[in-house]
Length: 489
Image (cartoon, rainbow, N blue to C red; front, side, top):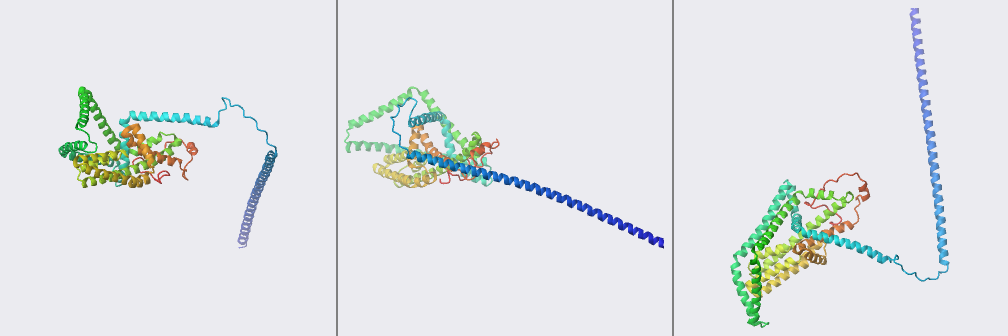
């Protein structure tokens, strides 16, 4: 028993000693770690202190340099002020005679005028060459422009059909067929009415000519029958000479007529196909055109094209409304006066109103002539008054409200554009002149406006990675979003 108790006591003392040694080892390890951490913290504090000292030194050096620069600038400013004061107090120098102007001493105004002059000459020459090239290709350019105007007019319909789930190509095809059918229906109806009443109109024309003959003899002119017969013989001789010249070489005349008919059919097909592709794939076409421009100018070209498209769309809508109002007004007056060919006159007025200023005047003159032949001079005068009334209401009420509000083109600009278009391209030039001026006005307003707040500078765009931009979201087949040039329009 004693041995067992001693053994257990030894084991307890041994275990206690081992536990004490382990506790001491843990304490030493913890003290070592704490010392290591204190050393690291002290080293970090010293590094931070050194860094703070360096920062303080740099700040002190910068402050000292700034103070020195400020003092230097102040001293320089005082020196300049003192020199200017001394110059003001000094006596003026005596005037000397100007030296003679040599060939190299050209006045600045003349030199500047010469520089602008040759630049303007280059611009005018380039514009002349462009106009001549477009005139040479008028059989292609004019149908494409007409197709662009039609696409601008019917693009909302195509967009609406596309939004309800119809494929854009199919909706464009339906719209083009609908426009073609509407035009053919109007022309067919007007032609049928003219053909049915042509015989009566011919008899009325002979009667009207006899009345005009009697009025010339018994009216205020007191013309003799000999003078009237001389005038009629002159007109008859002119017509006979014209017919003889055409009959002398019938093959050339047939070829000319055939060439004109071929040009008309070619232009019609170009208009149809161009309108379809403008409506169906306008986004791809516009994206391709934008990618042809330099990279730094693509964003401005894209935004300018969108603004021009908005202006063109608004112009075509306003023109259609004005033409419809003119046609309805003149048809109502013609029906009230019992003038024949009311529908034909309305169709003629509607189609001719797309040529500003000239088209409505020509159509009104035709309506007055029909009234003169069919009903006499009194009805013709009433018809003339009605045509003038409708045109004045349109010119002073409807056009300023629509074109001035949507397109913002001054009436003087419209007149000058139409005159220039007639000189350069005839009827086709007059048709294209006003929408071209409206689009150029919108683009110029957009480009001269202040850049948007989120616009990227050209230098930043030039430094961007060389990658082609994606096609525009809204191309020439859909009205683009608001832009600086089109918001006011």
